[in-house]
Image (cartoon, rainbow, N blue to C red; front, side, top):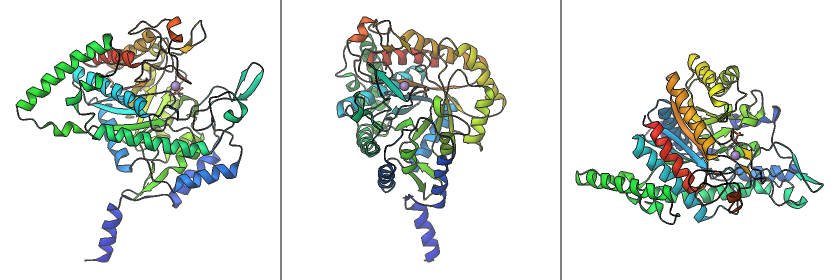
Length: 463
Ligand code: PEP
Ligand code: MN
């Protein structure tokens, strides 16, 4: 055998993900760009030591998985699939327990079943999970009773408890972000490939959730799915392919120290992948064209998203496309719009039209959460279910009118019975918020509200 040829083959197929190269050094140029929303680590040598440790740690995801997700997103952008992204605003270390993770996965699986069955559309499932530990904040500090401390920036940075020790950024938390992401992803992979996510288990997904209209409606859908599955099985269809489902991990790539340290060169392609998660997005607050986040994300090969708020101009969108997707690669770029129910009809059409007319191919996903945050009269940061639904409705109507594709939904939700969003199933009112308000940052749909939304979206999708 020709040893050179052998070398070549070995190189192409060894699945290595290398942590050092000249290309990776170029990634570090984000440090030369203006950066926002980064913590002030108290000790640079400690930060560097943790980064070095992360650089030698195994990647959390493989480059090939990220490529597969790009292909799935490309299908959604063509209208052949629908993206469902959901999970906490901020994961926490304490709540990354088996039960909480399982409930979130089940909720997303149930919503997917509703959408797939109701709209005959494959659903691309992504959790805001296994990495969603860092938050951009509107202020660097928070003042309570005359005491001013750094803002809580997510468990990856500091603690929520309002004491100086807890609020001081600690780079060792980046290591904990890695290990907690790894254990979350491990359970996620176990649930989604070990038979739990099998459509034949569709009834089991409802077990343990509280009964209510969403629960009952899902029971009835599960019976229909069951009957369809039994019918197909009787016809000789092999359902073993359903044993495992694809489920991807997504988070906001906010802490560039962490994202850089988890980036690797893929031996198949020679390209850089950020192996902290499959799909990464740039937030509304960090999408400056000449900023560190855009610089960084332009160099990694994952499928990526950018959040676009109501202030986004067509020009902003086109420049982001030029920077982040110069080759116009299908599935590479997703625009996640979060306009607010009161602004979407005014702002989104021009943006979608401008992008369409420029011939750029992006996947349009709606985030009906972040433009609809209000404070209740009893002081809770909350959202109204009706506003969330209104933004989703407008999103579908606008794409219908323009002949463009509504490619997906991005939600803040949890599988638990919390009371953080007003209205919907259970008609949570302001007093009701006091019952089980648990989020540290933004309010999430609870399990019932998530199912209700899925049933409503399935109707919109199938029209
Ligand atoms: C978020 O997704 O939690 C978030 C902060 O969103 P945005 O960047 O759209 O404000
Ligand atoms: Mn949020």
